Image (cartoon, rainbow, N blue to C red; front, side, top):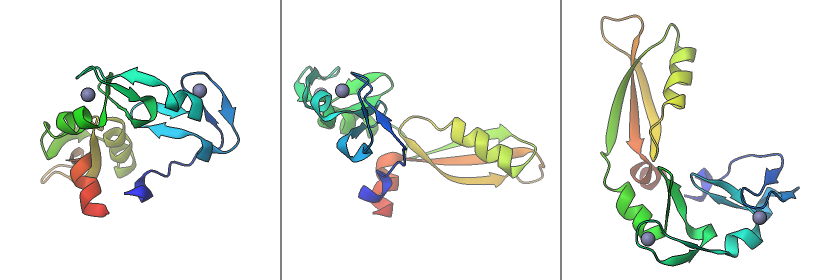
Amino acid sequence: MLGHQHKRVEKAGCRVCGKESEKPDAFQYITGFGYVCRDCGMQQVVCDSCGSKVRRMTVTVLRGKTLCLVCYRAEREKGDKRLMKELVAESIDDAVKISMNNTPEGYVLVGLRLKHSSKQTWTAEYEREDIYLSRCS
Ligand SMILES: [Zn+2]
Ligand SMILES: [Zn+2]
């Protein structure tokens, strides 16, 4: 699971107070929100779903809502396990770009293929993030 958390950044800026750090390790990455410094990560925030007070570093922002771990899990498991989307692209490079840019929140792009009997219509396949992670770790 940890292997997926490594997002390479040169310099991380805190999304809350704007403080910058030379070492991104000093920052916590909040999914759906960005990096926060330790001080801001320790602040208490209120879960938009259940109203409980939790430290900012433990929350996840999903569809604009700040969720505690419990609510995030519940919310995440509501979605379909897999999603398919069709897109039109001239080349595989474009198809990759378009499908990456249109990844639904909480999903990971797992496949892309040209539709049968078509030269421009692609099918992008997405898998729910929690299932993807449990399969890969
Ligand atoms: Zn901060
Ligand atoms: Zn909650």
